[in-house]
Length: 563
Image (cartoon, rainbow, N blue to C red; front, side):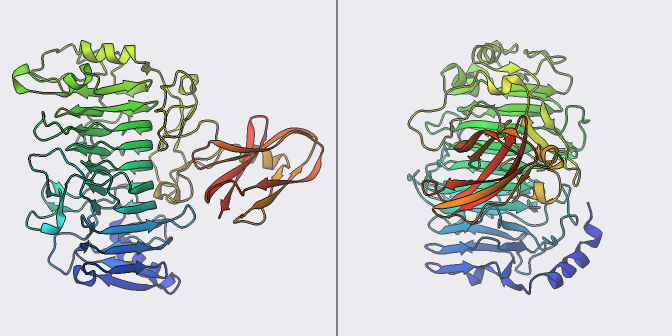
């Protein structure tokens, strides 16, 4: 932690910035039924709890920085942005210009002033909607905000509601405590509906949970929670949404479960949590990290309070303690998650599990097993869970991630798997569902792709945790050249130029942000010299793509924009 010099660095950063004006925002500055536009030429400083109030719309331009005061002048215990249940937010960043929510102590022009230990410097981002919740009442106040605040009430019966858009949004250094043990999550989603767009979202170094879901049916794709002090993902009270391409990276000083998953209140509520998750990669705080202080790293997955749900084609690795606990209560205590599993309402299919302290066996033996049994449960051997994992394609296999480093500046974090089992024996994807992208691999990242969707817009990349894209040096040192496409951004077509030092068998192709090949440009033998190729982009949706020159096992990849 480098807090001692943060104030001076922040002031230097503001002076050196591009003449940006710091605009302080208090709750009084945003009124109901109004539209507000925040632009990247300003830095917006949240002072206290700021509500996007009933009927209001907040538009945030790509590249905008929103900072928050550590000690508000308003008397609130923290600074946070809360989108009320009938309001909307449209925070539409890009891979080149993400939208950043962070502390006032964070100089975003200096990637080395803060790191993964700097948590709790402000509150967080909260989105509320009128979705269905599995609670004792159909509406309730959101966690982390005083119960007297009626604008923080969420819930209803509209699971298709649209709270707006979060795209390419990085939420950093939040989780301030309102009182001992009562912190704010990095991103809180309460009653958010399926029409809300949630893509490419990072929560970095939050003091509490990274992302927490309360009811509703939000759909979250390309999500990262890194170095959070409690659970990385947390769901509760009837969350029935979807997720794909989720990355968890936990710290060695503070972390609990990879995901803590609660069903409902009470446990037998007919509306219980049952989301569907594919292609997660959960990396714990280290299989050999001592359990002490704020570092528990209890389970990779913890299912309780009658939750259902589904994980498929995912990777869970490098946790200090157990892999999984499925709560198993005495029969007299009502519905539990074990019953959900036995009823087919909780399922884990075709996942890879590896690296859980000294626990290596598929059993619930306290000394050797990767399964944690629930004290007082009906089945202390957890045979129901052993059978489920064994019968549904789960394997205790090292995914062989290319690199697990938790050190800023090391460029040693590369979560792409190399094991053969990561590309074989996959669970089928839902048919007729346009949310899920069918892949040929397990985990959040394509092992065959030379870069990842986390590059370019995240704190993980900016602070130097992520490894450089692979395969570039081998070709460039041999004299191969891949030039930037022209024009870029492309409209109907664009031209790429590549130079070969010798005759070679090459392949040039275009992939989308997930690594899926969408176009093969050229494939064959080319003589030494300079060559041009035209890429027809008229049939591609607007967005970020990558084009790759592949020679043998080596690649050069560049990014292009289609407008």
